Image (cartoon, rainbow, N blue to C red; front, side, top):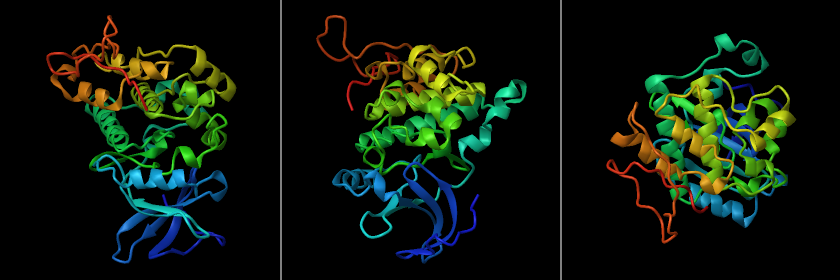
Length: 315
């Protein structure tokens, strides 16, 4: 939903006309905008004080513009200089996943009426987000802040937004800018290493994928609690309850939610397991380490005849 512009909001940024604001994120304010030809876009005006104008940020944006996937909202333009640094991306139509599932304390009190996805809808979400992350990671981009509000469920399937200026645009102390902005909503998707203050990697995105699929399937956030500190403590110390997941997704989500980032599968491995016959509903998908028992090298890539899931072994 687009909200009316306020007195301090810009009306134009370059050739893009702004008509309202959409949301405030960890990196800046996102506006509803239109190009000269009428094309609708999302314009994110970045917080200058969070280091968005570093050379690293410019490199991240350049890499993000190379991402080619139907499951991500493509970046059209980025201007990191001037008084209002901003990034322009395709407008992803449809409600975000938070809106579809519902959220907040009222949801936690009404467990019997919680919303969830099942069957083909759940599988399309799992495949679409895994495909989006695969495209990002293959381009050298780490989202680092993935949560349900970054996933739009439009007529053409899920699309991931909110990437482009990631690690360099956020404070490293716990990487917790988003936690302070929407505590209970965002915390379940924060990986253990993020809570410890480590820099996000592709494995951090994979953890968020697992937490998002678990939330969508069960209707409740991972390690849910009304107390933020307790929720983060549970993320660091407790195993996740996967009993509400379909059997075909349990090993994948369980591997993605591993406490140790190096034990998590790559997004491409998740995608392969979900889209090969071995990953079809009702089939077992096993998880095996990336290095064989003798330690001689990586395990073979998964195939329909060999449905193992290699773990993520690098950034």
